[in-house]
Image 1 (tube, rainbow, N blue to C red):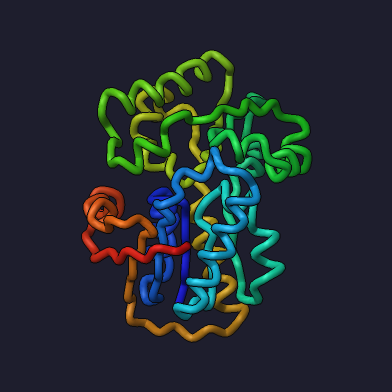
Image 2: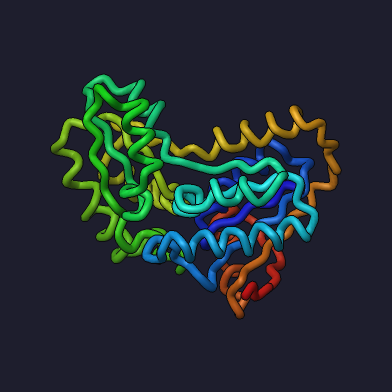
Length: 259
């Protein structure tokens, strides 16, 4: 079973890609909505949540674990790999392809403040963007708008424009999305950028990596395509309400409080 988790609903952008690439595989998705958003939390708190969630998903039969959250990957994936023996896939901003494809030599990265300030992003920049100017911008309030299902309202539009419009005078030609919530706001981003600027969403690359690990480890597909959705929030109804909006179909949602 493929297990994936995020602080909330943003990782459903990764779920869509994994589901499309591996339709026969059962997938369990956990949204840690009781602690969402992760961005303002300390590294120690994010690590504690990652280990708690990881232990729970392994107890439920996970054979591959996908950390479908840039902030959790940045803060906790090393600790998770030290504690757990199953294959773990993290996610990070697609700085490498964006920098490699840039013709203007200027790109932008949109992510949470925590991710943008992390050593992991600094390492990516040092390794892959030495000759490229990288503008780092935080999407303040974007995660909360996606969690609320407000993908196209005027408040969300204003929050997106506040970040993206100033970039249009900076001669950038690529934008790397560094938060799994942000792809759900791509239509609003496109209202500002048009089609001239390429957006990089790493979800498909994550799906390919999951497929590679399945083959490398010789995991047999259980082929029933069963999907399970869990929230750590007390009320599962809110997440159930958002699933058709975000992934195009309804599913039952369980509430599992994880202390």
